[in-house]
Length: 136
Ligand code: FES
Image (cartoon, rainbow, N blue to C red):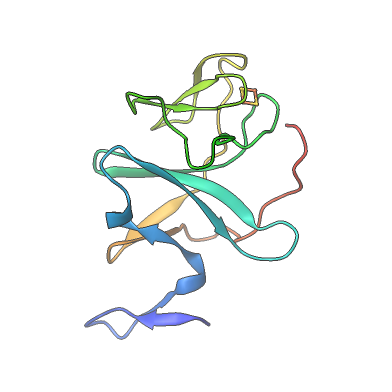
């Protein structure tokens, strides 16, 4: 395992499951991540909403495009909503629910996360691999 010891505990953190450091995210920021290898790594993004961090697959439920056709841009200008740059769908940050655009009522696919020792990590049981890019 690619592990790093947790100070004072003797436990190891699996570095292959680390998405980013919590400090990499501003209080309203979002960023993409890719974890895993091979043909279908897990491609997602994390978004901070105050003290909470949420993770989603980087795939729009409308037509299956990555949300950030403008690389790294996941949020509206006021940073209150997640934006799909393809056709303008808007999603709530805390639920992933589409609230405007071409797929109202549908939702982004959540990637469960855990925050541990200042690291944002894949949640327990989340496989570090994605799926073929096919329309939903
Ligand atoms: S693919 Fe996202 S709004 Fe169409």
